[in-house]
Each structure stands twice: as structure tokens, then as C-alpha cells.
Image 1 (tube, rainbow, N blue to C red):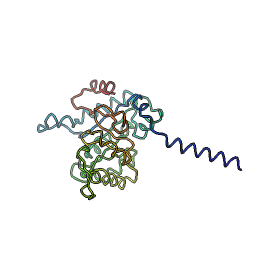
Image 2: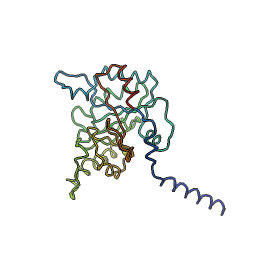
Image 3: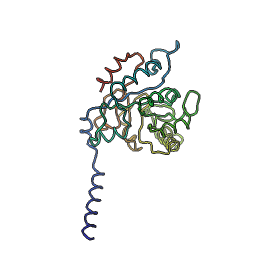
Image 4: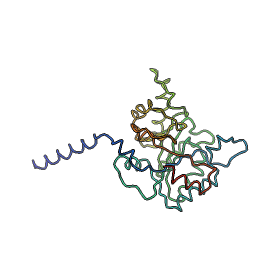
Length: 261
């Protein structure tokens, strides 16, 4: 009995030591990057859409063709927990892993995007801007909860899409940008899904190094930007994504997925 107690004590001590080990940033930077795609609106272009707008809108036929190409080419979607474990511990991933992310709460992500993913057994990550919840052309609470319940991941994307590098602290919580844009929206999403929210996407993909310790303080395991270089001091908080362009043919899309990471 005494020997068993000693063994248990040693094992517990080892577990505590293992959990307290710092993340090996150099090892994370050295691992091969996983392709991460970013989508916003999924709808056909209108005559009133300018060039900048079109960069964030993928026509329905192009979206469906691109997702079909991923399935036909043997890609497997992964979710952020898998990416985190791979980057921090080297945990194995399925062959040809890819992550599909959706920003801004647009309703067409639920009505068009999610059914198309489901057709091929894919899962996605939906970054929710909470000011939009329930508004016309945006998802409501029930739809967000359904996405989560069906195995997709819900992530935080601020209250109303203000850039994080512009945030200011204030003694009044109602005026503190970090409380308004990060703390309260994240708690709201946790209330909607019944799950802890561990992942964040920067509005416009924009970040600056001084904000990264604050993002870390809020407990996010991974934060997603767009196409800038990762920060070697905060590699998990500067994960790269690329926009899937409606201008790309299926071949161009395939080449960008292969060579952008």
C-alpha cells in the first residue's frame, strides 16, 4: 500500500511538471503549416459589388466547386483542437489536413456553406461577430447553437468588428474596449453553445504584437489572422489563413492551397 502511494505521488508530480512545461515556440514554427481557408459571404456577385467587396464574396457555384475539389482530392477537414495538439505536441493529423473557417456570422454560411460541408463529411470553424446575431441576413442564436451541436466549432470574432490594435483599457467596463469587444462577446457565445470558447479570429485579419499578450491573457489557445508572417514569439496567436477567392478557377484554387503554406 505504501509503495502504491509513493508511485501515485510520483506520477501525479510528473503530470503537474508536464502540464507546466512551456510551449516550445521553435518547434511550433518548425512544423509544416496546415492550410487554413477563410470565407465571408457566399453569394453571387452583384453589379454594385466593387473589387474590394468581391475579394470577400465567393459566388455560390465557385464555393461548391472548390469544396468538391477538396473532397475529390482527398483532403480532410480538421478543427482547432487538432491543430493545437499537432502544433504543440506533434500529434498526428489525417492525410491532407485542411481547416475551413468562416467569419462575420453571415446567414449564407449556415444556409449554403454548412450543408455543402456536410455533404462531404466536412466540419468548419465559425467566428461569430456578436452584434450581428439575429439581425437580417445574419445567423441567430439557434443556428449558431445548431452548428456547434453538429460538431462544428464556434469561435470569437469581437462584438462589432473593431480592429484589436485600436483597443483601449478604461476603468469603466462599459468603455473598456477589451471588455466590450472580447470579454462580453466570448461569454455570450459560451452561453449560446454551452461550451468554452478557445479560439479567436482578428477582425480584418489585423494584429499588432503589443496586443498579443492581452489576447493570451483572455485564454485563447489559438488566434487566426490572414496572410501576414507568424510571430515567432506568439506562433499560436498568429496562425495564417488565406481568403478563398471567387476569381480562382478550381485549378488556381488547388494550387493556392498547395503552395500558400
